[in-house]
Length: 267
Ligand SMILES: Nc1ncnc2c1ncn2[C@@H]1O[C@H](COP(=O)(O)OP(=O)(O)O)[C@@H](O)[C@H]1O
Ligand SMILES: [Mg+2]
Image (cartoon, rainbow, N blue to C red; front, side, top):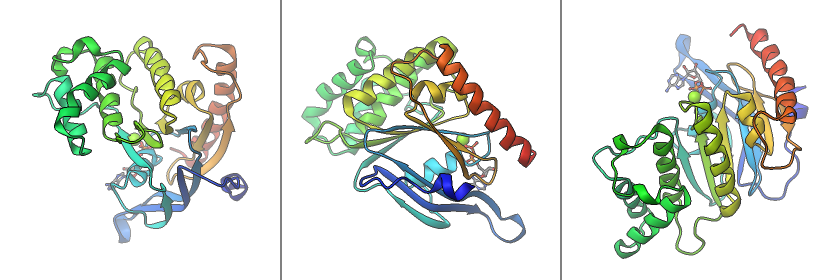
């Protein structure tokens, strides 16, 4: 059955296209197959959530798409999109102010010095941190630090010509360490920014409700080695409430499927 579900619909354009992607670590007896023949598309402007048990290869897959590691087999095509990756830990430079963290990212993108300060201010406003520009990361809450990390990820995809349109944003359990209330707020934010900027998002999580809250589509990976086992379109209108009955009921169905998968592999 796997073939039938992984065969991608014949879209003309994809912001991200994976075909038969496998990834093994090590060699000989210690060889570990992390991903097995993963095929997956993210359409331009689509929000795809990648869901799977811990250790199933989600981070491996994002790292491959980000170009931080090489596939063992298969192909990954991101067209010429600008790709940004955001992790669970914000990984900001602690000795730099919030503004300076963003400015550094803009500098890396080649934004001229004179343009960096005002652009950093706009980016911080867009994540509602306008008043915290001169703070250092340790002076912020976890949720605020993740907002800075989001602004920085957006800064890393800056382009003078289109203000960041056509960007692929890869998010690796970005809200996993936050309390539920902060996470709910950040769900609203990321959804707003995704829409405003027409981002294509590949969002990794092991939280089923989070995946249903955010995704146009939820792609379920098997336990190691990660394979696409099933895709669930999410038909509900946005914004969705994570505690709504519609979200809960689709999440329950997906959870059943996930349990089946984890059980099968004895993970
Ligand atoms: N650099 C690496 N070297 C060896 N094994 C790795 C490496 N990165 C990940 N793995 C292994 O690949 C599997 C998938 O890891 P990962 O992608 O981090 O899973 P997830 O993000 O879904 O929790 C795990 O068994 C992990 O131990
Ligand atoms: Mg991971």
